[in-house]
Image (cartoon, rainbow, N blue to C red):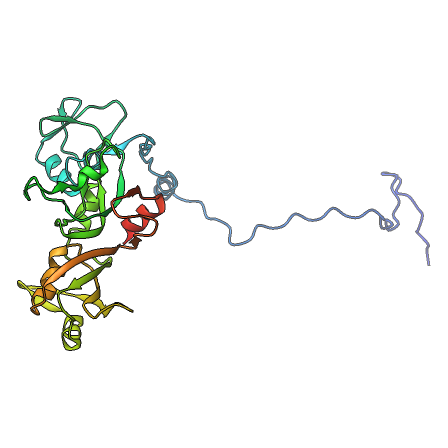
Length: 301
């Protein structure tokens, strides 16, 4: 056997023997692309892909400035009318901003704008909410004669805003009465389907019969309107002529009509609670401003 190991090729000078393995690690192989190899697209398909990749440019949304306010809210805040009524005035062209009629719903009023409402320049007011514990012989009406003073006399100096009572009270009715320049809130508590409770203490000329109490508790129809009574009871440790009545309505006339329907004379009505507000720490004839939380509660009532 010829041993050719170790011999070199004369032309190349290289050894014919098997090359020894290198101890150096081999570089890792590049990973093959996953999936099928993409086929080249024709011109039409390439154009479609290009169009899909390009997203349509959207118009930049106008940022709302913090001091801007919707036109209907501006009008309502001025005390001219409610927002709903303001929308009607805007649509009819009776509102001008800086001398130009505006009929656009959602128009934003900027600081410095001059708003003309139905021929008069208006400015928004800060919302005021005042709770009064009304005494006897003061009325919410202007037509009950000079011998009975108006309830606003009790609030003289409280505010310069044009406030009004939420609901009406005659001269003989006492208790909680809310005042505000928030026309939306006045409207809210004037609606017949208002859900927040009001509690009255009623003094009758005679004891209320138990059977009449049960009839009242089931509700009744007065002048064609259904009256819902949430609760009625005798007041503890008082004669049975002293009655506690819980209703949703802020109309005191309804309270009087309920008992007169059963032939009772109402001697006195005192509203002790109004939509969660009470007479606590509020003596007769005194008033106070509502807290921010109380205002929030009323708006959610």
